[in-house]
Image (cartoon, rainbow, N blue to C red):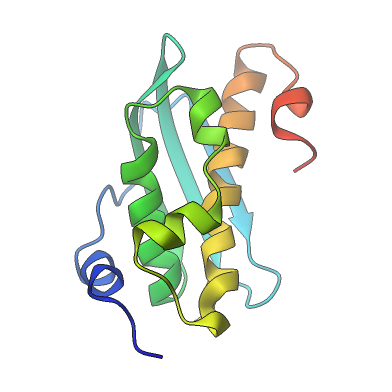
Length: 133
Ligand code: FES
Ligand code: FES
């Protein structure tokens, strides 16, 4: 199966790439299947994700899914960001080849890790919201 045009676009022109100096939530996760890693930065104000960026040492599918995921959570509440599934990100990209589905999990987990970090910095235990990560 070939990559969709949207996947190719987000791979070639990823949105929201880079480090964020004034982030108030940072999450880093690794993919046990391939060893690729991803870091997600969020800036939350009044419970809303005002800005988000990511950096990844990962494959093209990981880059494309992270790029799309950042677009999907920007401007959303942290609660809504936590509801974003890798399936929804893949659908927004018009699908991924089956062997690349595991790559999309990285973005979902990186968002959860960043939100968990944000909660911790606010002195809130993230476990009830995010689960164990
Ligand atoms: Fe990273 Fe597939 S293992 S490209
Ligand atoms: Fe590692 Fe895609 S192969 S995230």
